[in-house]
Structures are given as C-alpha cells and as structure tokens.
Amino acid sequence: MPTDIIKKNIILLGDGAVGKTSLIRRFVIDEFSDDYITTIGSKVTKKEVELGSEDDRTNMILMIWDIIGQKGYRYTQSLSFRGMNGALLIADLTRKDTLDSLQGYWIPLLIRIAGPVPMIFLGNKADLKDEVQFGLDEIQVAAAACEAFGSTMESHLTSAKTGENVEEVFHHIAEFTKKVKTKPKLSFSWNLMERDEIGSLKDIVDHIIADFSDQFGGIEHATPIIKHQIERSQLDLVNPSEVAIVKFVDNLANIESSFKSTEVVEKNRMNRLSLFGHK
Image 1 (cartoon, rainbow, N blue to C red):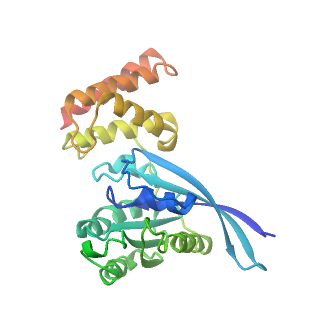
Image 2 (cartoon, rainbow, N blue to C red):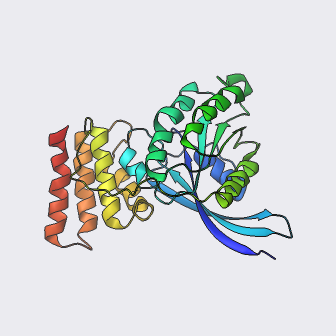
Image 3 (cartoon, rainbow, N blue to C red):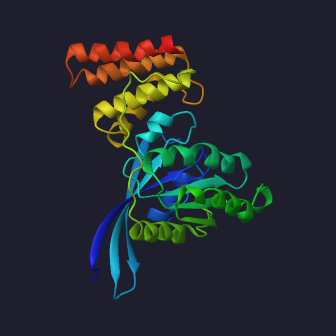
C-alpha cells in the first residue's frame, strides 16, 4: 500500500512543434497523433504515478503543464511558472535552433519565476534518424552549461511516436521533484500598466492575454475562453494584425460583461487598446 500521496507540478517547455503535447499524450494515454495543434495559453493534464519500492512506495499526482510554445509571449508563459516543481525541456532533433531556444529563452524565463527547479533535457523525434541535426552529445553540453543554476540535470533522447524513453523521463522528473524541495525565486505579479518592452503587435497580444488571465483567476482557467476568442477574432499568434487584436479585445470585453460591471469592462477595454500607443 502507498505510504504517501503527494502532488507535484511539472511543465514542458520548448518551441512550437517540438512535440510537447505529443509527449504528454503518449505518457498519459499511450497514443500518438501526427496532427499538430498549437497550444494556446496553458493546458493541465493529471496523471498518477507510483514511485519507489513496494516497501517504500509513494503515490504522486503529476499535474503536467503544456503551455504556448510561441516565443515572445513571455508574460503569458510566466503566469504558468508559479508553483512549478520541475521541468522537461524539449528540443526537436531535426531543428537545431530549438536547442538554442532552450538556453536563450525558455530556461532564463523559467528560472526567473520558478527558481532552480529540477530539469531534464529531451531531444525529441528520435525516430526521424535521417533528419536529425544534432544528438545526445550536444544536448548534454547544453545541460552542463545550465548547471550553474543549481538545478538537477539529465539528458535523454525520446520519441513520442514510438514511445522511446517517454515513460522513463516522466518518472525521472517525478523522482527528482520528490527529492528536491524547491522554493520560488520570486513572486510574479501581473499588472497591465507595466508596459515596458512593448515593441511589436505580438507583445500587445501577450499583455492582453496575461491581463485577462490574471483577472479571470489564472491562465489555466482562462485558456478555454482565450482559445475560443482567438479563433473568433481570427487572430494569428505568429503574425497578429491590428484588426484582429481589436476584435480580440472587444470579444474579451463581451465575456467580461457577464461578470464585471460596465465601468470595469470599459476600463479594461480601453487599457488594452491603449497598448497600441506604446508600440
């Protein structure tokens, strides 16, 4: 019988289309799909695992976070980092730039909010042997370069398609989070009035999504609404247009009108539209 039941939050990080959602699908329901669906906001999947021996067993509930992989949405992404206990860092073996992104974008962003949590580097799509641009040696070099953060590091090759090492790496990160007590490096509070570094339309969308999510009770709760309104507004997260952003703001205002006063709804709407003046 299990002697303990604990819950841990782990997050999968990496650029779009590296296979984060597919790895979660393989681990949780042991299935694979070639369909690529962009993750918008955050999606949380629950999976219970057993750790340890029969004499010293722990039941752990893993809350597995899959977030938007489009770089440039750092405020929206940061909302998901609070309370994380560990991270799987995913690079696509057929795209060398995705390994560079882990070092240059994803890890610094995670460390800033979550502190030195246990991390495992994964080179995914190991089944595409004729298309690989780098291997385990390069991944291990990247992992070694991050040891200065004081985090537990491992490196593995995986394939969501064949299942290679998928079960193992999720259990490894679970074991690491069980052994290591992490403390957030700093608390993250969102404020729409913090308009620094708005230099593009993508930055504006990032601020709007983060602001709505924070007022709605968290990115995980707001994601279904945000996803639907992005689709209704025909908003392309990779290359957003001003017309689509204005539609998105108006659609979010319509949603907020059902649970906020008219004055607050209009204030939020005008604050979000005013971001165009900071670009």
